[in-house]
Image (cartoon, rainbow, N blue to C red):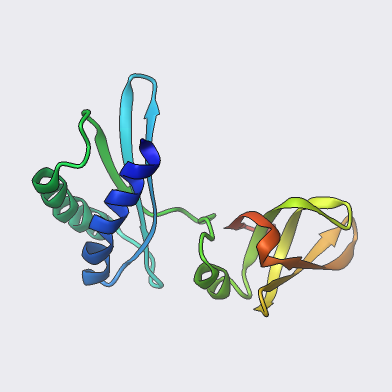
Length: 156
């Protein structure tokens, strides 16, 4: 049920977010304890501020009240995905070139399933990540088809 709600809300939120010159990153609908939470994550190249979150929340609330796709009571939260935002689509990965990333794969590549470093390139459905292995620099080549999860990473 929560995946259906997320998909429905995504379809309702996308035009609102686009109209405000923002990007819809993810919609999450989940139960935590006795409460349901509908979380809408938005972003923009310039970043997201409280006014952006408020504008999306107000417009989306109106649409949700009108369409009423969720039967139980819930809390609506609109926010930025944060500094370590998920990279859900290929377009997200392309925008992350030159930035720190953390990637996990469905199956091991050269004996490992987790890769962290700077995304050097993303071409031909392949991520090239330059990271550290103890004290030396290592280049990892990860096929996009094998990526289980990817997010931005703050490299120290």
